[in-house]
Image 1 (cartoon, rainbow, N blue to C red):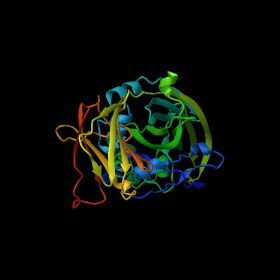
Image 2 (tube, rainbow, N blue to C red; image 1 turned 90 degrees about the horizontal axis):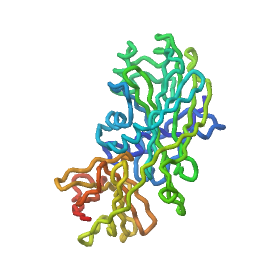
Image 3 (cartoon, helix red, strand yellow; image 1 turned 90 degrees about the vertical axis):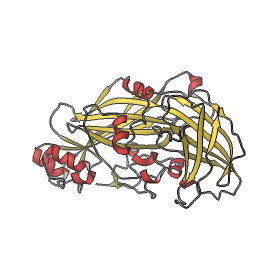
Image 4 (cartoon, one colour; image 1 turned 30 degrees about the vertical axis):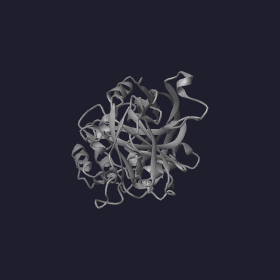
Length: 383
């Protein structure tokens, strides 16, 4: 089986803080055929720079029959406020569609986008309700224990030891083993080439596939001007069956299906007043703007580099707090983006907030310098 070392599991593309990221880019081998480029996910350069990627698969059991993005963020990151109520309402109103490839059915449960990221969740089951094991990106050495603490839960679900391989579980249950994919791709000209994917299992062992795709707009076109709240996208679906005797996989089928992703447009940006001449890490703060979307509030901090780019942007992290010093939760992108058009530097953040704060406090940290580093001054900003 040919392995594609360019295809990455990007679950932690969103993370920019060391406690939630690894500080190395790891490639994860994924099954792919050369004639099927739709199975590749290419990482945006800005995301590679701003967010350190963890390229390992994790899988979880959630004690609920309805798995969604709230479960995803809570289980993987312990963040229960990432998905706002407004974004959840849009996801809940997704018209469910089911696509079948051989013995496997893909039911699209939620579609959502703002002007930065598009998201999809897809329930994957057998088409006729028969018993089968369905996994994401099968590897013949994988055991249930490869799924960290969730391996114990999976083992109890199937009545096996956590060190049992997926093949042996399928043999014990006398059922087929399928490897599947359901990845979201924006269509041109909106595709920025970045994204992530991962999976959860519900209490019945059903797989829910989560996928995102980055969005970019042509300079001469705006979605607001076009008067649409939907963007064209495709889901790349495929099914492979694992031979329980040899561990080899054979292709059952694949398809590219069209979907329309409902999008939340941003409000007109609001500019905060900068009360003083603020310099940090050789960067002069020029402006801070905020825009509301269903995902939360996007914050755009513009700087001018006055130190010859000596700062280390890979380790910089913006912190946004309220009047009580409480840090705002990260939004669904789980990331800050740093874009450099030297000498201009822009840092984009998303916070999970229902409205643009009247006052907000900003601090830029260099997390590579450790506890001995004197933190940058906390700056109060007002509309």
